[in-house]
Image 1 (cartoon, protein in one colour):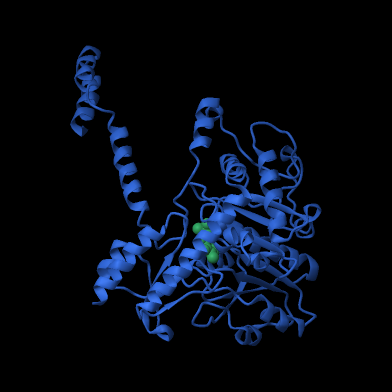
Image 2: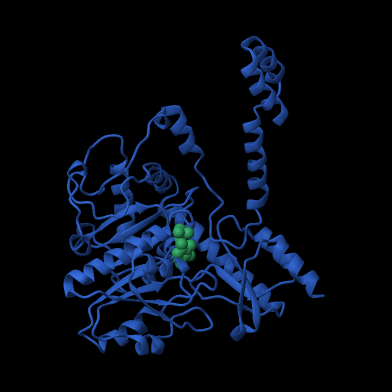
Length: 414
Ligand SMILES: *Cc1c(COP(=O)(O)O)cnc(C)c1O
């Protein structure tokens, strides 16, 4: 194939007639670019089944969306959601109306009232955390004329540490316990009482699915009423499924006060590329650095200028076709299978742990052949006996596949 392409090129330089004859010789063979893509697709199809170690939903159901996109011809234009979805009504070649509907659909699920809600569809969970940390620091600075200190647990997703660095803020990294939760006493020790506090709560740490105890931290903060506080919740994975379960109050700001939350769109919700949502209150939004941009109808509080119009359309499509009922079924299915996997491993006598709201089961690292077969990410914690692995029980991780893993484990343990 490579040869065919090279020959074509050479022929083109030599003479048109020759090029045509070379072209004819090559025309019978397939499009080499298509061949490359087919190889890629075969790899994806084969490997997604055993992708156990990473929090993505590989049960993507966007066929109807892609049919619409091609059949309608909408794909033949570059749509762009630049600007504030709640400020710009109309405009052209954007899907901002759909983005608003997406935010309005999700807002109340996290305890935001519709008349006190602002948000956007982000590029990712990281982008949502970027907004949370940026909005939080500007909000606190406006209120107190002081730069805040950011508090994050050392088990939180690294994006938070990266973003604090990027935004040139001061960080206090708080030690976490063996199960990935910020230690409240350590938080109190680190608290600087003459500076505002920007706290990033981890709602599902990456490896152990640890959830920071917001009530315990809030109790400590209540002892220092002069400290102005902004709370951002990093709920990239857990924020997707918790609202549809009996644990829904854990991500509801009416029960656990927070100022903003970031959730990934490609982890639970089943978008096929990185995306997410960021939600906050009007008060926070109104206390930002507005950067008035006249050609975008006024204020531009968000970090990015151009933003995807396709991601909001995809998540809107998923809301219409999966909806609250589908999300509920999927969420319970995941938690059920996670609890089952945990109990099967425990019965086998294999050291295993799981936070009860979590779909992430973590356990003593299996023999290398099994870890490789199921692509299990490694971690290490001496408090739990050394090397660890985890399985993130997403929609595509079926009981049948987990049974195969358990059979492999049982065989190896003999
Ligand atoms: C995955 C994850 C992130 C990063 O989100 P991206 O969408 O991958 O950028 C941040 N925090 C937590 C808790 C995560 O699980």
